[in-house]
Amino acid sequence: MKAVQTICRRLRSSKGFFMEPAAPCVGFSTSSYSCGRKKKTNPYEEVDQEKYSDLVQSVLSFRGNAQTQESLFEEDTLLYGPVSKCKSHLQQDEEARLTGNGFPLFNPERSLKPNTANDATIPLKIPLQRNKIPSVTRVLQQTMTSEQIFYLERWKQRMILELGEDGFAEYTSNIFLQGKQFHEALESILSPQGDLKERDENLTSGYIESIQHILKDVSGVRALESAVQHETLKYVGLLDCVAEYQGKLCVIDWKTSEKPKPFIRNTFDNPLQVVAYVGAINHDANYSFQVQCGLIVVAYKDGSPAHPHFMDTKLCSQYWAKWLLRLEEYTKKEKKQNIQKPD
Image 1: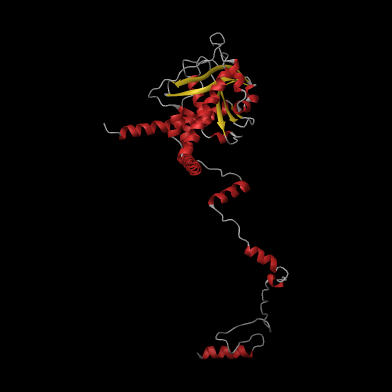
Image 2 (image 1 turned 30 degrees about the vertical axis):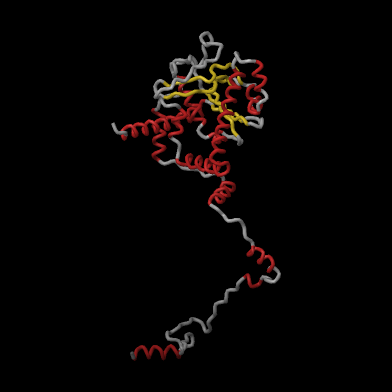
């Protein structure tokens, strides 16, 4: 204790150090004076607040529309573009397996060049046989993603809310009837056996007017409203048309829409439907030719120019791999349901 007191007395007597008597602890300084810290100034205090008071009040009093999850997603898409979803390793492995080892889209035993001697001048129209083999439409419907089901159900509920149950039933019935009449009109126009008078009457249709610029590039019709069956993969379907489009033989799928569909992604599962028909034709003994391309044509009731979505060999091969995945998923579901059924 005495040693501490001695040190304190020496420190008081030194010129270069000081000790504040009122402080509970000892402080040291290497200079004869201490510099206090400058007080931070707020830059907003220098602003003329009266000058901008009206602006501040208008900003604070403004009430915009309430932000919802959907509106935020729309703003993000507008500013940064659509979200790029990354596939899981499981999905990538499965797609790679099917793409590498799956059934081929094209038939190596069938020539790519059409045999004009054996091909009939009248387009084929093979009736669809109803049997236990699933149709392309059924496979696609039974393997829709949860997201597709959600949006389809939401659209249905919104239409029922607007039209009522009876009104919605009438609406869907009219849509089906218009599509049927559109296909019948196309059949009479593209078939060499079509009635000339009926063709002229069909030209007044808005849908037919919509596809006039596309019909100019369609020639060499091989099949109309004809059934196909993949004899190995075991599925059937009824295609709209097989013809040459701009010199390339295609499976053509005619669609009607009330909304513009300028991009192929707007057609949802239609590309899968087209490649399923392409694969079936190439392995169906009823057809002597081979198809390598597809075409989706979206026609509009008001006569607006239809949107053609051409699918070349590369694009068809990509969608074929996706179709094989859906077909495999359907097969697994059917097997599971059959196991669960009581004897």
